[in-house]
Image (tube, rainbow, N blue to C red; front, side, top):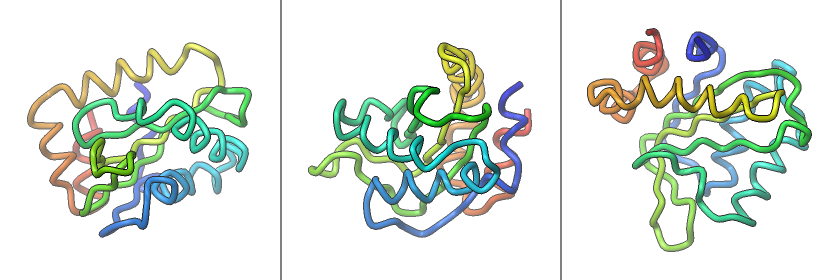
Length: 146
């Protein structure tokens, strides 16, 4: 299961970030460092939100930035940024997220399978609430350790 790729080395917890662009950059950093994505992939995720709006908000307070595989996805992977203070993906403090899960899929269409697996975990009300209340890496890992 893809959620097994959520390990302590891809999870970050922070109080806040200046804006959603920085949230995407910071959340992407572990996968950049592991060589799973390129800088171009990070820029493509930001460009997608600029172009299409906050479609990456997949549930209240949860965002899943991603881009097309050809933009620089080198390997399948996930990384997680948990914020104490949510960040807005619009200019009017709507579309807030405190859990940012960056998705990289090398194959087109694979993201649907990954989304389904994440939805399975996060559709459980206890898991969802634990994820949003998480205060450290250990708390996040407990949610996805299924």
